[in-house]
Structure formats: C-alpha cells, structure tokens
Image (cartoon, rainbow, N blue to C red; front, side):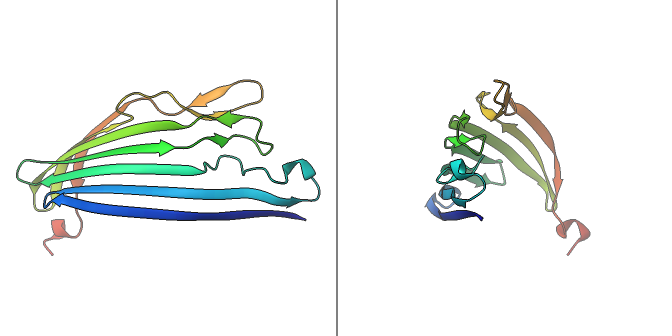
Length: 154
C-alpha cells in the first residue's frame, strides 16, 4: 500500500497603513510526505517531489487612479526536491515582481509589468545527469486591460 499525507496551513494578513496603501503577507506551510510505501520502502518518510515546505509572499499595493497604481510582490519559495527519494535538492529562491497601471477610462487601464525584476537565476527542475532547468528571466509585459462588464456600460 502506498500512502501520502499532505498537511498544511495557509495564513494571510493585510494591513492598510494609509487609505491608498495595502501591505499583504502570506505564508504557506506544506508538510507533504510519503507515510507508507510497501512496494518502494525507500520512499517512506520522504518529502513529496517538487513541494516546498514554505512559501512566503510579501505584497505592497498603492492605488492612486488619478496618477498610477503600483503593486510589488516578493515571493520566497523554500527548498524542495526534484525526485521522490529526495536526492536532487532544488534550492530556495526569491522572485520580485512589479506592476504599474493607470486607468484611462472607467472600463480599462494600461499596464506595465516586470516579472523577476532582479533577474534572479533559480532552478525549477534538475535531472540525475546534472541538467538544471531554470526559471524565467526578467520579463517585461505591457498592455491594455478591459474590465468586464463595465465596458458594456453596466
């Protein structure tokens, strides 16, 4: 019989130090492990592959529709393992994202988003042969966002 157990807690707190500013902090704790593995006893007690034990996010948002809206997020992802036997560790990493937006009508806004702002290099996968896949580099996106159903006049 194979049996896994996944327990966890997710917490989130929000503070509004100013009417236009919000600070959010969240934490996810995952206790995900193999508790029984009769066909593969070496797996018993190991963490599930690709499940970090901790993920922490800090977000700050400033809303001023007359000027600009700013949202910044810092995400810390804890150490995890690529494989079931927990022999291929993936190190913890931190990613920073930033988004600027400005409403240009009651139904739409323009935006500029920078993902992985600091261009952090971090492993998202690895093989036993030593090949490491890395997360995306800095990505810049811009565009126009339409808010439904306001664009239909409702």
